[in-house]
Length: 171
Image (cartoon, rainbow, N blue to C red):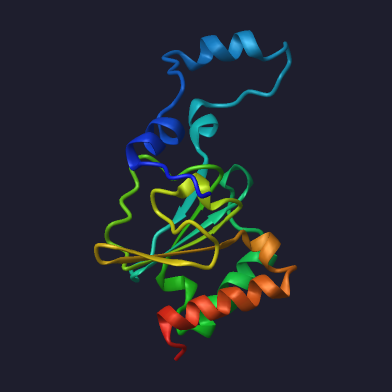
């Protein structure tokens, strides 16, 4: 039996912070042992990397700490997009750790392609299963396994290709 989550439940459970700390330095002083490296509040809060493009495709890739894509995953993504007539240079790439940035507006993108560990964490934006396509208003959302897993699994690559062919009609 598939569990259903309402968008309101999802946002309360995954997007809203569980606590709010006004003074980051006071908390840091309590948590870090003497001599620990100094971190700024902005580096603690950043869990994503955004490379804006002008195209109609948003690519969301789940990467540890929201860091930029590793070179091998970047190469795989470039190859995938090229196969359906896109270049990464023109599209928006958002790498995230666990969730989408709260202030990020996805509404301008006709296509949203997620490479994530688990579709449930993004149920508000994605179909229920990997390699399914969902339509919401004028947007199509697609989900695939994260790029690091995808590059090692031929079955996942075939499933991704089948899904992309349904949407993009290779050029």
